[in-house]
Image (tube, rainbow, N blue to C red; front, side, top):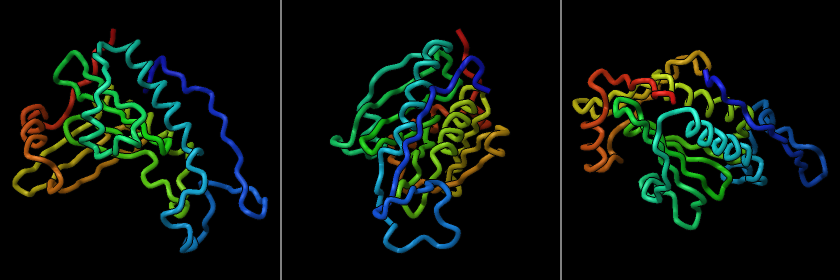
Length: 211
């Protein structure tokens, strides 16, 4: 899907527990994780490849697509990233307004906060705690697939004011036509007004124009 893009070479570091045994992140728990692993991240740096790949995607997008890229700390504020946790906040607006804009906020946790279209937002890692035990390779695949969906016009955003919810869908094979629906309670009036103005009538954002 990301024609011309090549993922940077990633070196996954090895980590050990207090006894010196290697930690098999991404496949640690066969059953419920221990209670003490919730809300704890022993090695947050293990997620640094997410930022490496995100930076590579931004660079590749700017090279191959007709897009305006600029730093925007205001995006980090919208996504409620504290200023002392902010590393970089980037906006990408394609020249064609029918295409979904993209935003990436890099945090000191070694993660990335995403904003696609008008209202979609997500975090990678989604949680990051040891109990959730997220797989970094899986996160990289998901990040590239979601970005590819936006670029190819396979990202759909539907605002349902009557039922007070929004639906986002990534219609790509890599994500299995992933769909999520959330409420509008935490959306500010200004954000909601902007979303109503820019989201396509049918919800389907257009493919980004290539250079």
